[in-house]
Length: 114
Image (tube, rainbow, N blue to C red; front, side):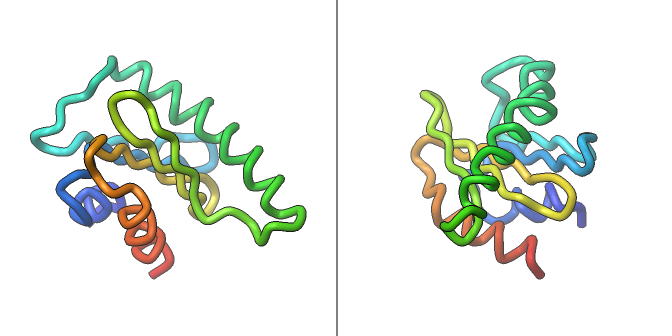
């Protein structure tokens, strides 16, 4: 099973999963029953530019004296976005606005570390 599909299976509130490694998108999967709120190109730019930069900024700060970064949580108007550092990049997870992003982030982190 792919990483994206495994993360999608963690919770029915997971809308979307993307895997970026070494600056290249390896997977972008939209969950069944969760149509995208925006065009595919917007998601691609978020995964290739926005999320890697945001993660890098917080990782640098976290590594100074806060014990690193486990994950980022962004609250957009329509959904949560989770960004987890993973191997040579990140895994990004869209979560329904009425989902539990912290629980999903912890489950995803456990999955990615196994």
